[in-house]
Image (cartoon, rainbow, N blue to C red; front, side, top):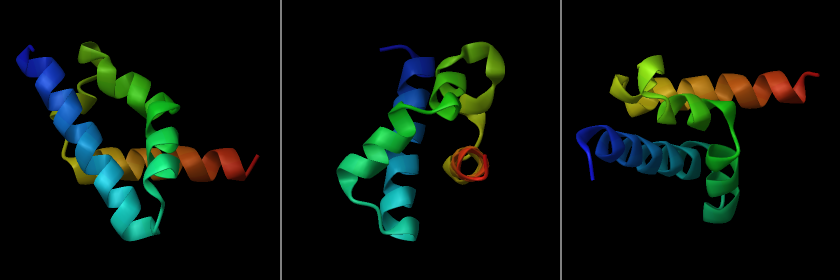
Length: 72
């Protein structure tokens, strides 16, 4: 596993944990929210630089995405 892939996996794990802790989501819902998001697509794109941001930053990006979808 490359360093990039490792960082993506760790960030993903941490964001899922934040969704469970802060938003009282069940594991399956948190997994669904993360893995089906544009945020996750960006996290996997090395050129986006999102993978070097803190998990809290990625979580906030995901929450912004989730809330913007609800507002439509």
